[in-house]
Length: 108
Image (cartoon, rainbow, N blue to C red; front, side):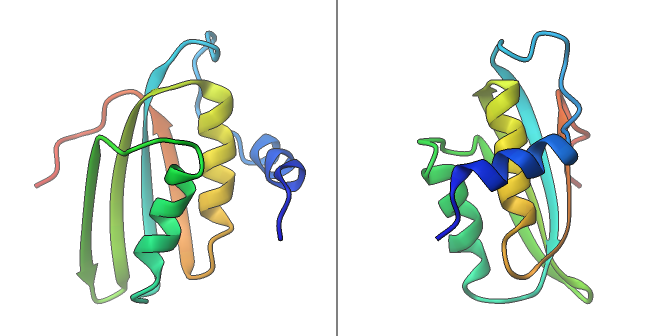
């Protein structure tokens, strides 16, 4: 079982673009590319559930290079966003993950 300490250390090394006021709630976007595995979505959403978060937006599509996930969560402080980003990167099957604070372009 993974403890929160290694995840926090990973969050520090893969920092999310966080504003100067990291203690203030904000909106964060997570963009993932992952293996097309049926168990991937529950593993990803489980990271949000562990923190009592429900994404405000979730879009998943399957392409030739795997699953593409766009997830938006509002009302999250910067520290939680960094820990969540590190946890998402550690999920088996996640090939790449980008996170950003603020608004993102609309999905086409």
